[in-house]
Image (cartoon, rainbow, N blue to C red):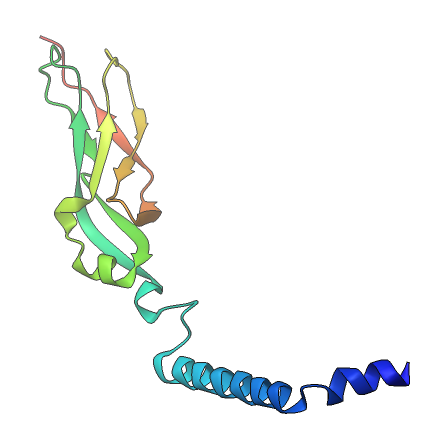
Length: 141
């Protein structure tokens, strides 16, 4: 056992010491570089950010044969989105669409329809307020 430990530490001592010093030097260089630039695991540009878009108009979608002029209340919504801070900051209100799909609805009284929101890739929807709109049907001609 003593012979094994002696062989482990004493044989090629200078080569082992040089390898250890080189490993410590590489580790110090890498750790100092990470401290100066920030952690590569969580880049600052990828931090998620939330943004609120107010007074977005709600589009009414109906079939091509249905030419009635539907009215909805409220006609605007507030949408909160989350995504990469660089993407969210450059996002325009025209890239977010809030819509109500009324295809296949003939007539109804006091219909509440759910608002569907589409956002660009890389952005996620957090909340839409209100979630539903009241639909008023004009008389069918």
